[in-house]
Length: 327
Image (cartoon, rainbow, N blue to C red):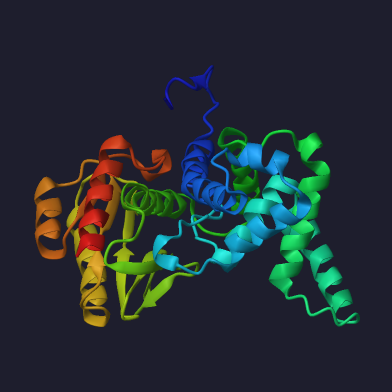
């Protein structure tokens, strides 16, 4: 694909779009969950689009509030930001309906709601922030639904794609780690789509800050919480090398091995999934690393040309995470 879009010595590739579309696709389970909540509240099996268009404002408000107040984390899908970090559930609900209703949910709408909430304290009406958000979002949807017109998944996907692109621009972090994080959440979403839960765990979160161990940092880390509130970790060391083979190859392997030894020292029960992006890597080195530390994903490409997990490696990662969640 990259060669196909390299025309007249000009690179027309939009690699970021490939990753953002994967992220946008992971919003579908959350969309389907919201649709189900609206169906239950409306006592109607119609689509989310149909129910929003045919409900009164109080009915829409009640359905939105039911989404906010659902705390059954073991059966709740996630909504992710542009960096592949899952929103907290109440934030996910806010962004979902805010994205449906209008643009700039953080920069414009949220400050307006904060001002309104501050004003409610002067009236002593007893509204919580969540109740106020549900009321305001429902009224915006109700008033503008004829202008918005469409609330189907395909339309929401396009809106999500646009919002995620803005979110990614606002976040720091390398493109490679964003690609890896997207692959990881795609595996979590695959498991949820096929099981409706997270296996032996009741919830997970992906760290929004690097995990520091000794003098190294790890940017792709998931924390799994079981039903006894015990935490496990999935740590993905990402190592890249632009030069091919040569005398530094073994030194690079030693660096990878030392990084994983550090993880084992501080987190002996952590699940390590190594990602190595380097050309002409030694299969012997890969086999040794895999035998000592578990799963290794090797991409035989220059890091500057890496654009995420392909179908084969994504399926492999899905299987690895499946085994972890099943225990």
